[in-house]
Image (cartoon, rainbow, N blue to C red; front, side):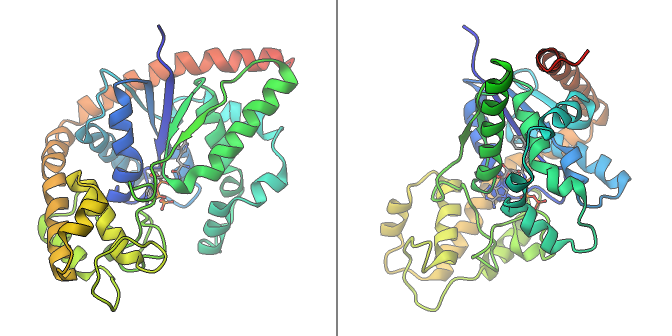
Length: 331
Ligand code: ATP
Ligand code: LTN
């Protein structure tokens, strides 16, 4: 029997951090065994903010190596760059003509980004969610594993699938989001400002732990993480965001439940929690980093993975696009 299709993407901007690992990639690994998976480097999304071309190219290869180092296996899953499959941009136009301005105006990511990039409020930032819907719908995707911040975009993809199916007949599978609970890493918070999400475009590297940070840096960043003024180690997102975030990270890195950690750390201080969390993250990342450096050294192989991935993705994407154009009366 054909397996359900899974699609997810990460923008090759900034550095991958443990927020992406716990919020998205960890789920990809689990689901890779049961789904027919496509993982994309969404570089067309990344250029909605200015990127230096040479750096973007180099970073894209870093990301492919990082996906593979985390355990995404190109024999089992399709890994490709969004820009290598022109069907994404073409379907985006067709969907754009069915997307209402009001739907895009209320997107919180758009509002955040235009507030941050006042010198470059471009059309791409606005229509970003339509391209994301095209990414997903092109492959008849059933499952989309993402972090909590992407929920609103996923809703739009679902609405567009239903709208198009109602207007033109069955064209698209309606996708379902797979978002880990906050406790399980669906929303990892910044280390120094635990009321905002950990983000790879943060100017202050002290806010995140990059997948490739060395052990000393990781221990130092966790030690500096903001906690609070009392000393109780308890999970409470609203009143103790910093401590709760550390418990989420420790739980994610060790596999221990948060309730188990709360009892284990009962009566212990924040220093203790921070040391153990830092060390657990170092232990989690050590094998990933070693594998990353081994893979990154062989650029020709990474290029080959991307080339093969693009071929496979294109074949599937062109099939859906053809059906959509036919249904819409485009010659
Ligand atoms: P940027 O800050 O460059 O806009 P980003 O850090 O939000 O990007 P994306 O490429 O937009 O990263 O996200 C890739 C995936 O990682 C998405 O599924 C997203 O939901 C997830 N993700 C990003 N940040 C976090 C986080 N702090 N906690 C959990 N998941 C996250
Ligand atoms: N917008 C997403 C990245 C993304 C994506 C996708 C995720 C682009 N296309 C399709 C899942 C499916 C983000 O994380 N910022």
